[in-house]
Image (cartoon, rainbow over all chains, first blue to last red):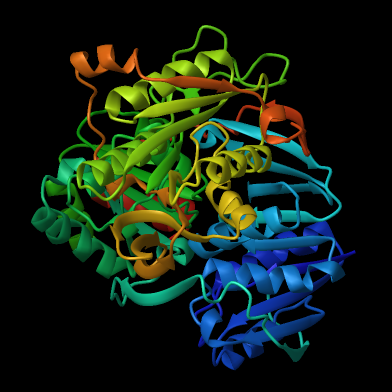
Length: 310
Length: 249
């Protein structure tokens, strides 16, 4: 059994989503190799080599792989696939873009968003926005999986795997090209890896109020900022802050939901948080059914008060 | 240029689904079914391309049971020109659907395929990427903006850190994310007109595809339920609980 893990990174640094997916790979069992596809990505490769439980790190570099666009990345993974029984990636927007392409080229069915490894070929995954959990057995010779990392702890360091370079095939690299990233500049922790998240909903009422009320509390706690789909659709928060089935799936130690009613699709994105706090004027809001601690009241009074007393 | 829009018939997004008592699946009897919401966005985008003179014909296609005609009629009422139903009973996995769609895209010589990024029933998020791979085309997934150029398209994608703009060669597969557009409601006259638009019925055999499932669904379970906790009276009490009881701050 050998497993290939397609790493999430930005060339300079390795994302902790890779370390979390590594834990899922270790649970499947077998030798795990990490593939770093990128450009000038030796720093990310060195970081991957230090993770515990890695056999080797494969570094593939080319211009077309700089941003790991789907066509070139899939061609690379397919060129390596013969040596592996399982190919997996964290279910990031990159993993979700690339791996189904790999699966189709290998004529296998992918198992998407694995939340639990039952055995080497059997996995649990959410369907219907997390309202049901499907237990599926993959029958193809090669298993292709994306892993929802919120359910897995990050693998630790302590490894000393070797890094070996391979040539990236040129196939696919003429199909698409990178133009630009318009990334949110922020000093805050990433939503998907934050220990604390302060999230705002439609009750905030405007973009100004969202920033005025949510930001100070997040700053005080060193927390990431999240938002419900309703708040994003209303233009109160940027789309990359959206937590939910159609946004990001998070599992911080502490999730503070301010003015969020708790629609099914939002709950699907945060119900694995360790501790959930809900602040809402409506005491019957569904968010209180999943909250460990709730305060019924006006968030415009409670949230600033909370910030002052911390 | 012909634009192909695959649409899926799924449980309506407002329905609270129930897991069957024998854990064999989700209760689908007597449940309201609708077009997958992401596919509605895809139909809207295709129709707008036609209205802007950038597409000659919009063809909606669905793989599913005979009742999937309903979602195709919806697509026709929104502005698609004609429809194709490939009749399959039971579950079809994304890989099979992608193979069937490849057959349609090739036969119709489509220049662009636009479909939803995922279906809200199986949440697989695979079909578009798989179709693109099988056709050997480029892909622009999770699109929030599509600008068609000459022989290429600029696609703005919703990615984890924000947005990413890429240039893709045509022909291409584009998958629609939530913020690509707001789909229109079909007007009554258009719903009436849609009944007269052509809808071809096909079978997987017409495209030389065998329907087979590669994943065995062993069982379907209820998700773990969280217990509701307690209500606290003040921010001070909350801070005390978070510090001393939960130990998270």
